Structures are given as structure tokens and as C-alpha cells.
Amino acid sequence: MIVAIDGPAGSGKGTISKKLAEYFNLSYLDTGILYRAVALQMLTEGINEKDCRSAKKVARQVSITSIDHSGIRTRAVSDLASKIATISSVRKELLTRQRRFAQNPDPDKDGAILDGRDIGTVVCPNADFKLFIMAELEIRAKRRWKELLQSDPTVIYSEVLEEMRSRDERDTNRKDAPLVVTSDAMVIDTSNKSIDVSFNEAKNWILSRRF
Ligand code: CDP
Image 1 (cartoon, helix red, strand yellow):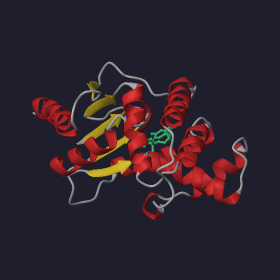
Image 2 (cartoon, rainbow, N blue to C red):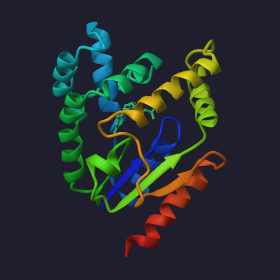
Image 3 (cartoon, rainbow, N blue to C red):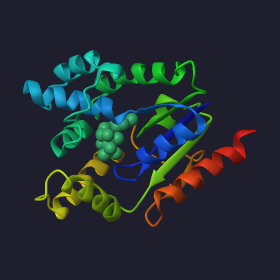
Image 4 (cartoon, rainbow, N blue to C red):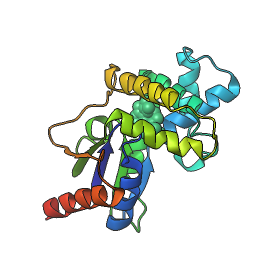
């Protein structure tokens, strides 16, 4: 079985996806790490964000299994990831890897679960289950701000809020594979719900439609 999870930053989709992966015995891929890996490599090499040819070359070299997770969660990487995610040639490179992952889960698993922005629309349009996880912008920004405070006590909430607003705008307004709610997706608003309540909602929805 294939589960597609989409939603904006800070909606809780990553945590819910991991819990669903464990419950249903699925291979899990956070597709955002691919875009983040490209962004980090570009920052390291000093490549200009508008240099589409170089961005594509970097994307071609990204391999899911060898991504170094340290340093990919910074604000600079988040910002650049959403910028290079608007480049179609970058998306095309990363799409093949994501589809391969979805179609070839580990042999001991019962399928795959992928989370991102375009999983239900582009990566796995035929997924058995599609979920859209959302929350109000201010609540999502507050969650991200609290996360960032753990490594940097000087982080300012209003800046995190503005960065998230810009990222939302880029992700929803880009031409190629924008973040959209599709009519076949189950929408969960986590604004005023705990992770456990949101997870149970997702899990029970899948169970109720599984057979
Ligand atoms: O963790 P967070 O929700 O903040 O972001 P992420 O899922 O790691 O994704 C980082 C950026 O990559 C997003 O802002 C998107 O612009 C881009 N992305 C995308 O375009 N398509 C995906 N399937 C996943 C991420």
C-alpha cells in the first residue's frame, strides 16, 4: 500500500507520517530532505540560487540513502530549498528518485509512505491513501520557533513567521507541482490537536477504508 501525505511546513505531517509508517509497517521517505540536500550543497559550494543549470547538476547527484542529515534543518537551508523547489529541472531529477522509492519499498515492509508537497498530485497520484495535514500559519510558526530555540535561544518569532509565510507562498503559487488540497485527500487540521489525536484520526481513516 502507498500512503501520500502533503501539507505545509510545521503542520505535523512528518511526525504523523513516522507514526503511520510504524503502525502500518511502511518504508518512510520525508521528500523534503531531497530539496534540502540540494540547497545545502549549493550553499556549501557557493552556487547562486538563480543558477538553474548548476542546481540541476547538484540534484542529479543526490541519492536518498547517502544524504547527510546534519545541517539540513537550518533556516537558510529551508529558505533556499523552497526557492530551488520552483525549478522544474530540479524537480524532475528528484521525482525519479521519489517514485523509485515508492515503487520499491524494503522487502520486509508492506508498502511506502512519503510526505512532502506534491506526493498525492505528482509523485504518487495513484496512492491508495492521500492525506493533507494543515494548521494555521501562526500555530505552525510557533511550533517551528520552539524547535529552533533549542539550538539557538536568540531566534525571533516574528522572523520565523515571516519566513514561513514566504515559503508557504512560494510552495502554493509555483507553476510546477504546487501545494494544493485535492478532492480525494482526507484533510486533518492539527491547529488545536495533539499529535496523538491527529495520528489516530489519520490511522482510523485508513483502517476504515482499507478493506
Ligand atoms: O520540514 P518542512 O515542512 O519545513 O519542509 P520540508 O518538507 O523539509 O521541505 C522543504 C522545502 O522543500 C519546502 O518548502 C518545499 O518548497 C520543498 N519541497 C517540495 O517542493 N516538494 C516536496 N515534495 C517536498 C519539499
